[in-house]
Length: 396
Image 1 (tube, rainbow, N blue to C red):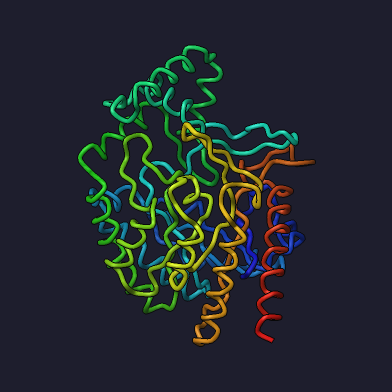
Image 2 (tube, helix red, strand yellow; image 1 turned 90 degrees about the vertical axis):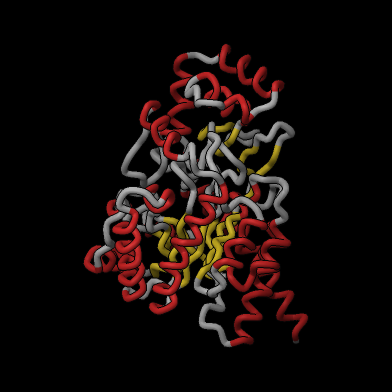
């Protein structure tokens, strides 16, 4: 697999030079300043590409061209936004960037309650605490009909947790859940977030799935024509939150999308951390089943707790068998080479990483520190090289 690195642009505290020092050859980035539904211009794309190439790297994957709420709900000026999306695909393709990752999560992107969960080794990880989340949803946000999302024991635990919180703890929890995300150029406050939730009161899972399919049936032919591959990122976490519909959380969700849009250009970003947040997902089985249409890979791990909480573990230390996932993907690469596919090498990146060493106390995008991802990439590289060497020896 091609080793790539997420870079948030010129303001990212982890520089391109550090990405290259980590051993990455490809960069995963986006024009975050143009991600409110406007067309990504060729001039801006080429400017970003020149920055990447000046550091001796290749812009391998776009992550992401944002999909606005108008497209997800098919309301307002969604037609203009889709037309702009198509033109952005064309401009990205003509700039030589072969893969476009996107997501269809409504309102929120990835959600965590704690961005500084202390680990036994003194490092810090991202954590989703189901009780803290319920405490916020029920007693701070006071979402309409929120009680229907939780059983009585969970509500009681959330009430006790909320009653023990200080004003400062509530404010930090709220910031983590609705007012923070790397590279997002807008933020919600409590009232505006409630207003966004109202948009989805009449949109169920099948409605949202239908809107996704309609969107893909429009943009996939453009991707095919231009020779680029689209790959949807799963929901994170891969279960419902805030009463919102989710359509990319399980293997059944992926199957439904592939059945509705069978073109190879419509593919999947296999994010083992996002799918892995739902313990019902078998990541090795998913890697094998969907291998021909996996166009991009995020590798990270999670450790689950009985109440539905989880935290991001060492890349090789959580509940997901990343060695088995890597083996399945390397097998797929071999099949693609035999078939003569131009996309035989699948780009991957170490997703998220613990806050470790000299990065502690420095300004970092949570989950995207240097040392933690360096450690993760080194571990994954060792796994991949070992599997490849074993495969070569077996073939010989």
